[in-house]
Length: 229
Image 1 (tube, rainbow, N blue to C red):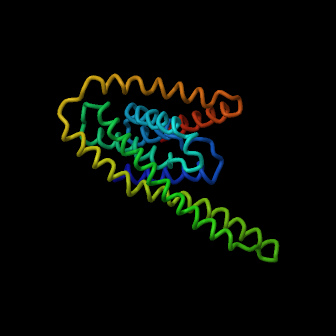
Image 2: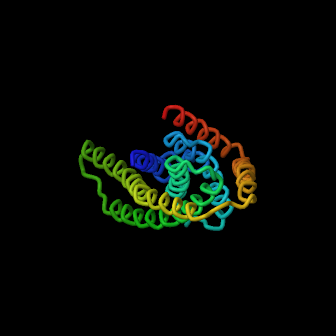
Image 3: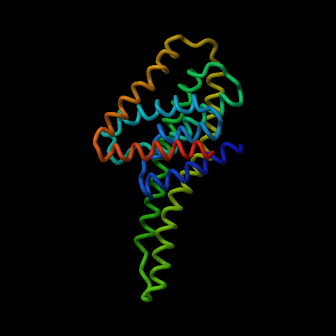
């Protein structure tokens, strides 16, 4: 439960960055996975799940447009579920557990997107009724409160979503993998190939100079956060 609470808090912070902050791309699964791995001490599984989720969402991102999956919720839930199951059960079928958790992470990303859109509608209605007071000090305080409150709402929604979904995803992953006997060799081969494919997609997506800077910044922040945690 301790890890779940920490990961929920992490998801809330990443959500603020992803949708109400600097958009450093730290909330993308390929980067947030490093934080999840550091918290759970399952870095290999976390990175494998993270790049798999990143690869899936990059492949459909352009087609989805603004109605994209909630990559923060889906990424933390998917990677977190894999790490928690491997940490608590000691299952040696890492590839199979990761593949199963990735599936539930994709589902969580869709559910998280629905919650995020509902939260955005509430936030927009609230901000639409905002009016600045006549005095300058009061106006500054009211504006700061509105901006901070808007960002906090975004973080709280994703934090609560992860708090609810992560235990469910971990339980379903454990139940699903526990009922399976052996695993086909192709699963291990595919899991080994996915990181290479994901890396190629990431490099292609950030090939421009501007986006490359964001990719480097996000990577450095993820490594720094993982080292501190």
